[in-house]
Image (cartoon, rainbow, N blue to C red; front, side, top):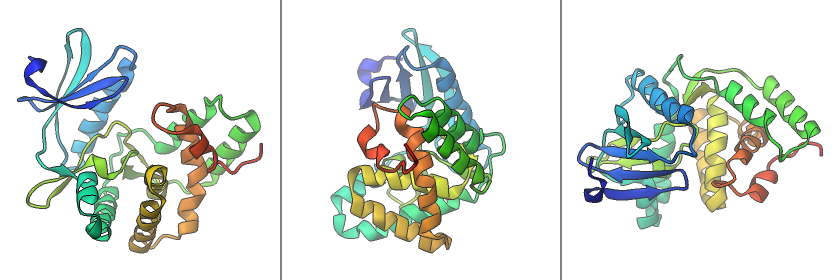
Length: 249
């Protein structure tokens, strides 16, 4: 594969993503765990098996000594781009976004890892919180209802591709689990709130209204999912997340 003829579309500290003739190629730096790379590939295949229309996994291989995942390319704009380009249509686009999430969550992928186990593992390993804070969060998690819905884990408008026909496709399933839909909604709310509180509030209002879910219930998940993201210091601001973690210090 000649990457010099490819188009770099995303660059992170741990990966580069290219658009090539073969599709979307994600090339990971050696610092990124090999297990996480293969887990992303496995997640993608397990979501494919739900018959949800997503970009399919084509191959996992090494390129110049680095592990890479090759996935189908879906043409179109991201929903994030469309929201930015046409702010007057924000409510329509947000409605489409929420309805897509709700359709996604109707699916089941029993081979995916359980969200509850992942959250427990993330919170238990935190050094940014003391033992009392971790205990309170884990106790809260154990009392939350147990569900097994398909959850994306990073559901935001940059991970939704809109084709010219209007068809929407969800991409990037690295964090997919089976679990509670409202926990997934809480994660999406935090992603919006990190950038724009008004968008976050609009999202939560639409999600709860269309899913007949109390906002208070989604908010009960916020300390849990915020704490779980503290390990991702390169992607989330610690001070922002800590304000959501309302447990005893």
